[in-house]
Amino acid sequence: MKRPTTPLTAPRLLVTVAISAVVAVGCGLVALAYGSSGFGGFEVIRGVLTGSLDAAQEAIVMQARLPRVVFAAIVGAALATSGAVFQTVLRNPLADPYILGISGGAALGGTIFMTLGSVAVATVTMGVPAAAFVGALGALALIFAVERWTPASRASNYVLLLTGVVFNAFASAIIMFLKSVVSAQKAQELLFYLMGSLAVEGTDAATIVACAAVVLACVVGLIWFARDLNALSLGDDDAAALGVPVTQVRRWTVGISSVAVAVAVAFSGLIGFVGLVVPHGIRLVVGPDHRVLLPTCALGGAGFLIVADLVARSAFGVFSSTLPVGVVTAAIGAPLFVFFLWRSMN
Image (tube, rainbow, N blue to C red; front, side, top):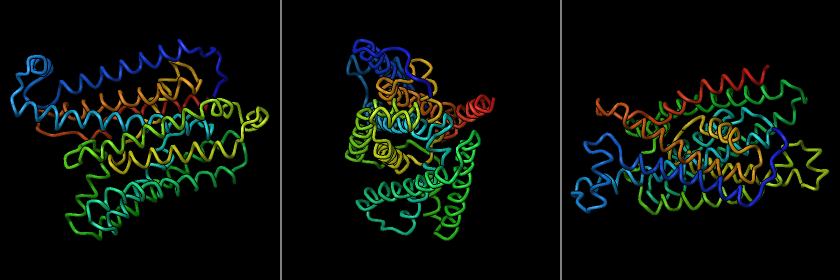
């Protein structure tokens, strides 16, 4: 992480956030107008302006596309903002909730609850996010333990990455075991949960609003610590010398990020690399100052995942099939991860 070099002024912050918001809203409008159904953007715009949408078209736009676009924005904002914070707190440019195993831990917690918990709708609605949060905290505890036991060196970053890989493998093994001992119907439910999907059929509006409120509160809470995160990017000793309570800031920011990741994973499954790709891309444009980086990452993550989901649900429309959005993000993120890893090693 580099020291912020460009002074942040209120006009610069407002202009940057406004441009990011316009881009994110533009992505949402494009995703709202296009899809695998038989009508596209021109028909939607004309129908909205003239009020001539028929019942079927209105149902597709308002009950299928709009909730999905909103949910994609929520999940994208949560994963991208959390990724930026993890990269700073762990001082590791390759940190990402998915790669570090935090998403895997959340998925394991959610899977265990779905397998062993109650089937009551209200309980699942509240219990899966809570179990996912516990799983995410468990993975984080492992990461911090490994960080503490690993001698400080250039190789420590790779130890953390390998720890995440190993934990993901362990979580996958437990999940596969659970899938093998449950009924076929439950196994199918777990499969769709783990594939990473933004389909919101069957999810009521109150749940989506609650997810949005939690993620928004997490993003605002992380922005509250932006100055402290700027100091942490210089190193723990320098941050402490500047009067930053390093341990407390680290615990609060990691805890808030874990809540955001847990909510995202609980309702969307495993969607990888958003927390890696978006922060690096945004940082190249706006710089490393977290006061502007974090809100821009939230909006950039929202726009990125909206577009990725549009590609996922449109690319195979001719085959009447929808690609899991996690496949699209992995296709983009995996090559970039190799590039960042290669650059870090050199």
